[in-house]
Image 1 (cartoon, rainbow, N blue to C red):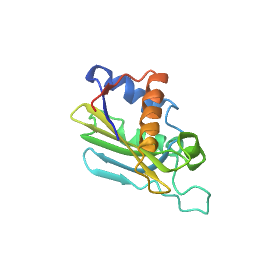
Image 2: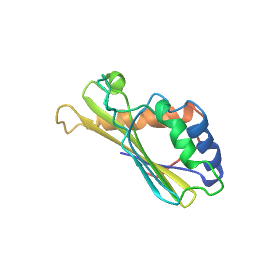
Image 3: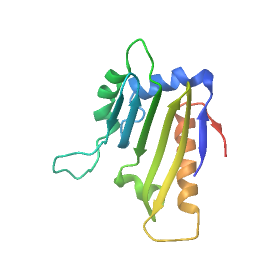
Length: 149
């Protein structure tokens, strides 16, 4: 698990990429919480028979954008992104799930990564591979960040 933050000078650019561009569109959503004048909670769960259990960011992004847009910016935005199952083995064959948790609060954005394994192991390669993937994803997409740990 790593903790990374977006420098304050790049928050606006990141929010544009998140809300108006397709950068995160293939990630599935395990939950969204937005606090502005009220609290909005979105589970991300699909209620149709589907191979996927969760919506993608592509499907939710327009709704999230409509909640956020306006004259007053939200106090808090929390989003739990997860890597779709078809990509898990590309990160590590023992990977069961991979997450990126985003928190926007007090004009700051930070991320934590998380992973789980199919089979218990003391080896930290699964988590390390995921952490490196996330950092490379951010670098490749010109998202400036500070690695906190």
